[in-house]
Amino acid sequence: MSKRRASGEGMIRKKPNGDWEGRIVVGHKQNGNPIFRYVYGKTQKEMMQKLKVIKQQYQDADLTEDSNMIVSEWLDKWLTEYLPGTVRPQTLERYQRIVNTYIRPHIGKKKLAFLSTNEVQRMYVKLKKTGRIKEHPVYGHELADNTIIDIHATLHRAMEIAVNNHLVPKNPTKQTKRPKKKKKDLEVLNNAELDILMQAIDADEGWGDFFYLELTTGLRRGEICGLRWTDFDEKEGIIRIKTSISLLKGGEIYEGEPKTDESKRKILLPKITADRLRKRKRISEWIFPNLLNPSLPIAPPVAYRKAKSFLNKLNLPDISFHDLRHTFATHALATGVDAITLSTILGHTNPSFTVDRYTHVTGDMQKRASEIVGNFMDDIL
Image (cartoon, rainbow, N blue to C red):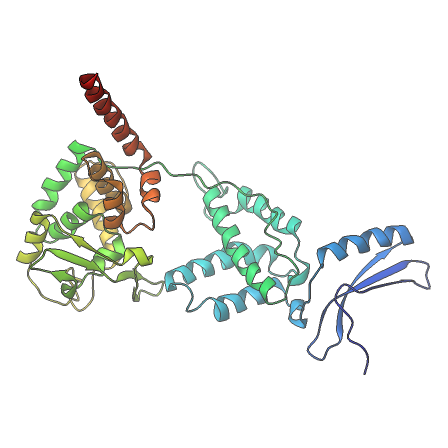
């Protein structure tokens, strides 16, 4: 029985036509036979230079014969065998859309083990310039920076699993350059605008309780849609966040856990909010059921459209549903709620995230605090 050749072991030879060939072992098949990578050169020096490059590239690699699959085949395997059960269904749908829309058409036919950083970089550059499917009146076919970041994150995750499974020697996405994620400016309603909205929802029999709860707790859309009556402690005025609802591509309602462990929380409601829920008619297990089919909860996209409708009718800024959450948080901080308490209410992983997210508010609070400290120090002195 022949000795198993170690990965990285090389050999060179001069071919009959005078060219030079070099090869190294980069892995092994199931039967133990070596997998080679070859380089060629007109001269021994040229070939040795190329051999040095692939030795560095495949250093410590021990690939399997599955490394011969193309990128498209690996992405299918990753999406169907490795991701299900590890991410939420809507996250899986997002990965599928990014793979099928952007990655597969550009590098899907490339050999997985040969995919280089330069090829990935060229894909990012091309997608940035011409990746938008429908032409935008301002940006044309140019993709947004954040979309490029999402494409990179998806491919990077898939290639990390490929590295772990000995399909590629290194992750080719690691050395690429991509845009830095831009922090989106928060859009919130000011005091006057919030007052107009609160008066309007207070008078709306169908949606008043829904948006009153949203603007006094800052719940995520899926969280407020997923509330059951069993989550509401009527006596104590507490709601427990245990579920998040989302709408999948085929129109199916998916019920899962909240975004993070910290998102599983209980919130003591303001008295007026708790009273509204106590008086609310119960026609289903859901606090906010689908009006056409009470056995189902309100779907998050429906709540999004209703919020837009309210804002448009009242000539208020065209903010998103999530900005109602920001509106609650901004006004809570501005009126004296401390960041640690607010972080717990919002279900943030860390209070420092809350402070960083609402720097514009905490900055004003620090200014007022410095004035207060200055005043009482003046009195003492």
